Length: 254
Image (cartoon, rainbow, N blue to C red; front, side):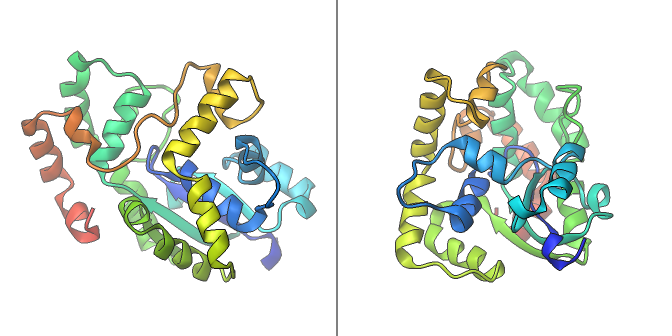
């Protein structure tokens, strides 16, 4: 692949804001003023990284410009690809775990064991045979040590100062957008707006990313925000998690 065929990635550990950022990137590049946002548009334009999406890109290069893919893989798993710009979404690991607990519908009786496993392995591969991702720390460490062009975007920063961080993304991608489009993107990708979009697409059986999740009885937009772990974990569990991930939380002000 040449320069125009580089694969740009939106990468993160699962449940860190990757899908939210996919909607944002989609609107930065492909926004049409008179077209309602649908999850299918986003998912088709920025599909998940796998052998099928790579093959599709190579067969239909003219339809993917630029090429953006979603990924939860470590750098070592994808370093042989012709990588371009990488946006790494970083979220507090306690909020990540809380979101995963809700996503997998882990009962309260099993939360203590889940916290212990996450502290020990920094991973939740024991939850599902389909959870084939690196550990939380391995994912971050690998990308941080790579020589790729990377923008580390913190979930909490995007929540607290959306406009400033959209401008960071746009500058990183060498794009130019006006203030009106930033306002439009902010409105269309607000958590409650996307939650309503998920509900609507599922109720109306509209083909797309959200309706596909309905088949598996999954509510994707369950609980946005930060420090949502306080609603799930005990003080002792929070203390243990904070101690385990202290160096990362402190370094990145998570």
